[in-house]
Length: 260
Image 1: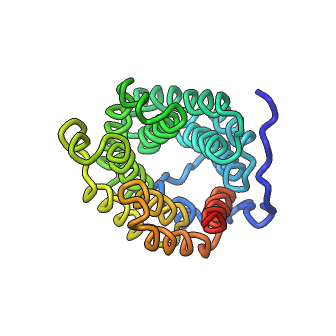
Image 2: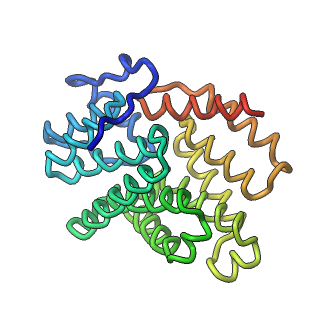
């Protein structure tokens, strides 16, 4: 494994040493509903993740050999691939690895909420990397949807799964249209917006919830919703950052506003 790029921001305020991790856990994991890990090895993997040491988080998470450690490793790798990996082939390889590891984890522990979610997330991002058209042809959409449905069956208030389902509906409609999307894949604009709205209700402090809703509106309606999307990006850019991922989210929102 080559050395990964560092998060290009000051992450010193995102250190959750000792009891700070436990004290901040509910806020940090409001979006993914990850249970508190009782073992120190998994806790260390999550500390590395939150401070943006993604490569070390993967190594520590895999070494922990626990469900939570695996989830930390997969989330760290997925966020790195989403925001920091520049080579497209590297991105796809990283997402494929996460999807494979998460799939195995769901088989080993079917009640591992974020194994199902990370499987869906990695497949979704991989689908974006290869193009939604190719992903639909390969049957990846159905696998992604099944994992998201399982996530919400286990954790109905998993906000990140609601975000991903909002994107699932929006991106298929954006590619094949409302009629074909409805008849062939069972997607709809209403369902997309309902999932995005639910996520915002659950995690109103989250930059990514605002960003993905904005992205979804533009995918579904184009420039007709540019004002609403801009307002969502503005709210995302103003969100408080509690870890490296949130810092990357906020920076992305600001970049979208600067491109307008």
